[in-house]
Image (cartoon, rainbow, N blue to C red; front, side, top):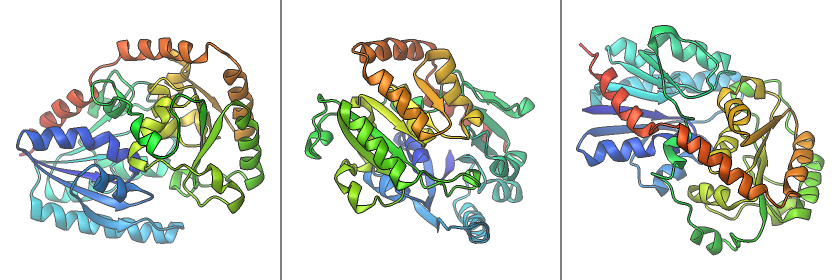
Length: 346
């Protein structure tokens, strides 16, 4: 089988990496195309996935539109050369037009319900739409649901075991309390209209959380010099090790909030778009692994109450066990569904 997987975001590297490894291990041909966004290419290189870069992230709607057109054009050319049996993506904006033009089935994994523009550009051209637990949308007969949260594709115990060594090499004692604080750039299309917290708000967050342990800040935008001492020293490819040993996660990033929660780390998701994040709401309402709030100051109040509880870690271990017991093998589902969709090509 010949498979083209398009990756446009760092979280998608992790989501698809085990599928790529399984396909290549059994002799299938896999072409990975990628977008130069944040640390996406660095992650691909660090974990040893060969890839072709189609474009670099741009800012502003006109520039982003031109970049998307370039990505689609280059992916169309790549698909003509590679001749895949199926195109695979998470979100799926880039693969829809090339797949439709070339008659190649399109398998899309989707979990960003609040991104209306992405849905409008990608899902109408998808052959199948795969969604995990908590997903809020309904795509009719094309929708294929799996009984797990998507991040289990790469943080489930069967595919990931936290390693303390990278933390120690970075100067972090994994068995001393520390809190991961996440700030995002708010430059994605679905983030339009949302203002990032000021430096004063971030500095106040560091000050308040420091009462409970070391604060490690991971940010998509450069930190001011006054916060340089709090910058995350752990390489991006070991971010899940950092989350797994943390006392708590507080931040604006939805992917990292889901990952922390699924790893059994108390997570506070501070984002005004939270009502459209079905997976995170599922982790909150069904398992109590995450708390969602609109803004960082509200999240700090939650984190402070949690961190004052001596039984916090034990409570979250128990809650995570319930999550693990309920979920299916996401990678097995991905492989099985990919084969089914590839088989629809005439």
